[in-house]
Image (cartoon, rainbow, N blue to C red; front, side, top):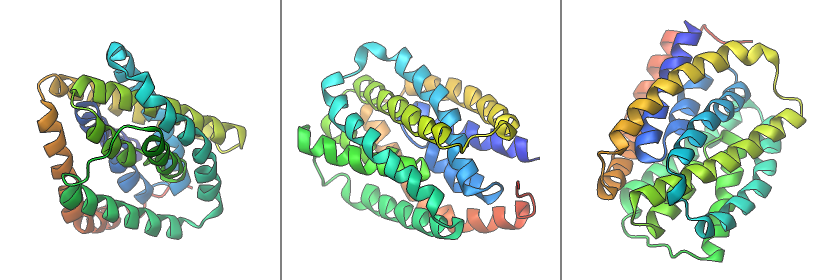
Length: 252
Protein backbone atom coordinates (compact mmCIF):
# COMPACT_ATOMS: atom_id res chain seq x y z
CA UNK A 1 0.00 0.00 0.00
CA UNK A 2 2.79 2.40 0.94
CA UNK A 3 4.63 1.81 -2.34
CA UNK A 4 1.46 2.31 -4.41
CA UNK A 5 0.76 5.59 -2.62
CA UNK A 6 4.36 6.68 -3.11
CA UNK A 7 4.14 5.96 -6.86
CA UNK A 8 0.77 7.70 -7.29
CA UNK A 9 1.95 10.85 -5.52
CA UNK A 10 5.12 10.87 -7.65
CA UNK A 11 3.03 10.42 -10.80
CA UNK A 12 0.83 13.41 -9.95
CA UNK A 13 3.78 15.61 -8.99
CA UNK A 14 5.89 14.77 -12.05
CA UNK A 15 2.94 15.32 -14.39
CA UNK A 16 2.39 18.80 -12.97
CA UNK A 17 6.10 19.71 -12.99
CA UNK A 18 6.96 18.45 -16.45
CA UNK A 19 3.99 20.34 -17.93
CA UNK A 20 4.39 23.59 -15.99
CA UNK A 21 7.98 23.63 -14.69
CA UNK A 22 7.17 23.13 -11.01
CA UNK A 23 4.96 21.28 -8.53
CA UNK A 24 6.72 17.94 -7.93
CA UNK A 25 8.28 18.81 -4.59
CA UNK A 26 5.20 20.65 -3.34
CA UNK A 27 2.91 17.71 -4.04
CA UNK A 28 5.31 15.03 -2.80
CA UNK A 29 6.40 16.89 0.34
CA UNK A 30 2.79 17.73 1.21
CA UNK A 31 1.71 14.07 1.13
CA UNK A 32 4.68 11.72 1.58
CA UNK A 33 5.45 12.89 5.17
CA UNK A 34 1.97 11.68 6.14
CA UNK A 35 3.11 8.07 5.86
CA UNK A 36 6.91 8.25 6.12
CA UNK A 37 9.36 10.31 8.21
CA UNK A 38 9.80 13.87 7.00
CA UNK A 39 13.54 13.49 6.36
CA UNK A 40 12.94 10.23 4.45
CA UNK A 41 10.45 12.02 2.22
CA UNK A 42 12.90 14.87 1.63
CA UNK A 43 15.73 12.54 0.60
CA UNK A 44 13.38 10.42 -1.55
CA UNK A 45 12.15 13.53 -3.36
CA UNK A 46 15.72 14.59 -4.10
CA UNK A 47 16.55 11.21 -5.65
CA UNK A 48 13.38 10.82 -7.72
CA UNK A 49 13.27 14.45 -8.82
CA UNK A 50 16.80 14.30 -10.20
CA UNK A 51 15.91 11.81 -12.94
CA UNK A 52 12.86 13.84 -13.92
CA UNK A 53 14.53 17.26 -14.12
CA UNK A 54 17.64 15.99 -15.93
CA UNK A 55 15.41 14.32 -18.53
CA UNK A 56 13.45 17.54 -19.12
CA UNK A 57 16.64 19.64 -19.17
CA UNK A 58 18.26 17.37 -21.76
CA UNK A 59 15.13 17.44 -23.92
CA UNK A 60 15.16 21.25 -23.85
CA UNK A 61 18.97 21.67 -23.64
CA UNK A 62 19.34 24.16 -26.50
CA UNK A 63 16.95 26.60 -24.82
CA UNK A 64 18.90 26.90 -21.52
CA UNK A 65 19.96 30.49 -20.72
CA UNK A 66 23.25 29.89 -18.90
CA UNK A 67 23.83 33.59 -18.16
CA UNK A 68 20.48 33.76 -16.40
CA UNK A 69 21.06 30.45 -14.63
CA UNK A 70 24.53 30.84 -13.09
CA UNK A 71 24.02 33.49 -10.33
CA UNK A 72 21.04 31.77 -8.64
CA UNK A 73 22.41 28.24 -9.00
CA UNK A 74 25.77 29.18 -7.46
CA UNK A 75 24.09 30.84 -4.49
CA UNK A 76 21.61 27.97 -4.08
CA UNK A 77 24.44 25.44 -3.92
CA UNK A 78 25.85 27.34 -0.93
CA UNK A 79 22.59 27.87 0.99
CA UNK A 80 21.33 24.30 0.41
CA UNK A 81 23.94 23.07 2.92
CA UNK A 82 22.40 25.32 5.56
CA UNK A 83 18.96 23.99 4.67
CA UNK A 84 19.98 20.32 4.99
CA UNK A 85 21.65 20.94 8.36
CA UNK A 86 18.51 22.70 9.58
CA UNK A 87 16.37 19.77 8.36
CA UNK A 88 18.31 17.23 10.38
CA UNK A 89 18.39 19.45 13.49
CA UNK A 90 14.68 20.23 13.83
CA UNK A 91 11.82 18.07 15.11
CA UNK A 92 9.40 16.74 12.46
CA UNK A 93 6.44 18.56 14.03
CA UNK A 94 8.31 21.85 13.79
CA UNK A 95 9.33 21.13 10.20
CA UNK A 96 5.71 20.41 9.23
CA UNK A 97 4.53 23.69 10.72
CA UNK A 98 7.29 25.64 8.99
CA UNK A 99 6.51 24.00 5.65
CA UNK A 100 2.80 24.73 6.07
CA UNK A 101 3.58 28.38 6.72
CA UNK A 102 5.88 28.56 3.69
CA UNK A 103 3.24 27.00 1.42
CA UNK A 104 0.62 29.46 2.70
CA UNK A 105 2.90 32.43 2.02
CA UNK A 106 3.66 31.10 -1.47
CA UNK A 107 -0.04 30.59 -2.20
CA UNK A 108 -0.83 34.17 -1.18
CA UNK A 109 2.03 35.50 -3.32
CA UNK A 110 1.15 33.59 -6.49
CA UNK A 111 -2.58 34.29 -6.20
CA UNK A 112 -2.53 37.97 -5.24
CA UNK A 113 0.87 39.45 -6.04
CA UNK A 114 2.67 37.48 -8.77
CA UNK A 115 0.99 39.43 -11.58
CA UNK A 116 1.91 42.74 -9.92
CA UNK A 117 5.55 41.99 -9.13
CA UNK A 118 7.92 42.29 -12.08
CA UNK A 119 11.49 41.26 -11.30
CA UNK A 120 14.36 42.21 -13.57
CA UNK A 121 17.09 39.77 -14.53
CA UNK A 122 20.26 40.78 -12.73
CA UNK A 123 22.97 39.69 -10.34
CA UNK A 124 21.25 40.86 -7.14
CA UNK A 125 17.80 39.47 -7.95
CA UNK A 126 19.31 36.21 -9.21
CA UNK A 127 21.43 35.74 -6.10
CA UNK A 128 18.51 36.55 -3.80
CA UNK A 129 16.17 34.09 -5.52
CA UNK A 130 18.89 31.44 -5.49
CA UNK A 131 19.62 31.97 -1.79
CA UNK A 132 15.99 31.45 -0.76
CA UNK A 133 15.54 28.56 -3.18
CA UNK A 134 18.68 26.77 -2.01
CA UNK A 135 17.75 27.00 1.66
CA UNK A 136 14.17 25.83 1.08
CA UNK A 137 15.46 23.11 -1.23
CA UNK A 138 17.81 21.79 1.44
CA UNK A 139 15.19 22.07 4.16
CA UNK A 140 12.04 20.76 2.42
CA UNK A 141 13.20 20.05 -1.14
CA UNK A 142 10.73 22.77 -2.07
CA UNK A 143 13.16 25.18 -3.66
CA UNK A 144 11.12 25.65 -6.80
CA UNK A 145 8.69 28.50 -6.03
CA UNK A 146 11.31 31.27 -5.61
CA UNK A 147 12.92 30.29 -8.90
CA UNK A 148 9.56 29.86 -10.62
CA UNK A 149 8.63 33.40 -9.56
CA UNK A 150 12.01 34.69 -10.80
CA UNK A 151 12.15 32.89 -14.15
CA UNK A 152 8.47 33.54 -14.95
CA UNK A 153 9.13 37.24 -14.38
CA UNK A 154 12.29 37.50 -16.51
CA UNK A 155 11.45 35.15 -19.42
CA UNK A 156 8.65 35.17 -22.00
CA UNK A 157 9.56 32.01 -23.90
CA UNK A 158 8.17 28.77 -22.45
CA UNK A 159 11.04 26.58 -23.68
CA UNK A 160 13.67 28.97 -22.28
CA UNK A 161 11.75 29.21 -19.00
CA UNK A 162 11.29 25.46 -18.51
CA UNK A 163 14.76 24.47 -19.76
CA UNK A 164 16.60 26.98 -17.53
CA UNK A 165 14.40 26.17 -14.55
CA UNK A 166 14.90 22.40 -14.88
CA UNK A 167 18.68 22.78 -15.23
CA UNK A 168 18.63 24.85 -12.04
CA UNK A 169 16.72 22.03 -10.34
CA UNK A 170 19.15 19.46 -11.73
CA UNK A 171 22.23 21.16 -10.28
CA UNK A 172 20.55 22.04 -6.99
CA UNK A 173 19.06 18.56 -6.55
CA UNK A 174 22.45 16.94 -7.09
CA UNK A 175 24.06 19.22 -4.49
CA UNK A 176 21.31 18.51 -1.93
CA UNK A 177 21.48 14.76 -2.53
CA UNK A 178 25.29 14.69 -2.26
CA UNK A 179 25.11 16.58 1.03
CA UNK A 180 22.72 13.89 2.34
CA UNK A 181 25.07 11.14 1.11
CA UNK A 182 28.22 12.64 2.63
CA UNK A 183 26.44 13.25 5.92
CA UNK A 184 25.26 9.62 6.06
CA UNK A 185 21.51 10.22 5.72
CA UNK A 186 20.92 7.77 2.83
CA UNK A 187 20.48 4.02 3.44
CA UNK A 188 19.77 0.92 1.36
CA UNK A 189 16.43 0.50 3.15
CA UNK A 190 15.08 3.31 0.97
CA UNK A 191 15.55 1.40 -2.30
CA UNK A 192 11.97 -0.01 -2.52
CA UNK A 193 10.58 3.49 -1.98
CA UNK A 194 12.97 4.90 -4.58
CA UNK A 195 11.80 2.29 -7.09
CA UNK A 196 8.15 3.12 -6.47
CA UNK A 197 8.79 6.85 -6.75
CA UNK A 198 10.79 6.48 -9.97
CA UNK A 199 8.07 4.32 -11.57
CA UNK A 200 5.42 6.93 -10.86
CA UNK A 201 7.75 9.74 -11.91
CA UNK A 202 8.50 8.12 -15.28
CA UNK A 203 4.82 7.84 -16.20
CA UNK A 204 3.95 11.31 -14.93
CA UNK A 205 6.86 12.92 -16.80
CA UNK A 206 5.82 11.35 -20.10
CA UNK A 207 2.26 12.62 -19.69
CA UNK A 208 3.43 16.06 -18.52
CA UNK A 209 5.81 16.57 -21.44
CA UNK A 210 2.96 15.72 -23.82
CA UNK A 211 0.86 18.45 -22.18
CA UNK A 212 3.76 20.95 -22.11
CA UNK A 213 4.06 20.90 -25.90
CA UNK A 214 0.45 22.07 -26.10
CA UNK A 215 0.62 24.85 -23.50
CA UNK A 216 1.41 28.53 -24.07
CA UNK A 217 3.48 30.66 -21.68
CA UNK A 218 0.29 32.46 -20.66
CA UNK A 219 -1.34 29.13 -19.94
CA UNK A 220 1.61 28.05 -17.78
CA UNK A 221 1.43 31.27 -15.74
CA UNK A 222 -2.32 30.98 -15.25
CA UNK A 223 -1.95 27.31 -14.43
CA UNK A 224 0.57 28.14 -11.72
CA UNK A 225 -1.79 30.60 -10.06
CA UNK A 226 -4.64 28.08 -10.28
CA UNK A 227 -2.43 25.32 -8.86
CA UNK A 228 -1.48 27.33 -5.77
CA UNK A 229 -5.08 28.42 -5.28
CA UNK A 230 -6.30 24.82 -5.38
CA UNK A 231 -3.55 23.75 -2.95
CA UNK A 232 -4.53 26.54 -0.58
CA UNK A 233 -8.24 25.67 -0.66
CA UNK A 234 -7.91 21.89 -0.51
CA UNK A 235 -4.98 21.51 1.86
CA UNK A 236 -7.07 21.19 5.08
CA UNK A 237 -9.35 18.57 3.47
CA UNK A 238 -6.42 16.61 2.00
CA UNK A 239 -4.51 16.64 5.26
CA UNK A 240 -7.47 15.35 7.26
CA UNK A 241 -8.38 12.72 4.68
CA UNK A 242 -4.88 11.27 4.46
CA UNK A 243 -4.33 11.44 8.20
CA UNK A 244 -7.45 9.31 8.75
CA UNK A 245 -6.77 6.91 5.87
CA UNK A 246 -3.06 6.16 6.20
CA UNK A 247 -2.17 7.43 9.62
CA UNK A 248 -1.23 3.92 10.72
CA UNK A 249 1.14 3.24 7.81
CA UNK A 250 4.21 5.08 9.11
CA UNK A 251 7.57 3.71 8.04
CA UNK A 252 9.99 3.34 10.93
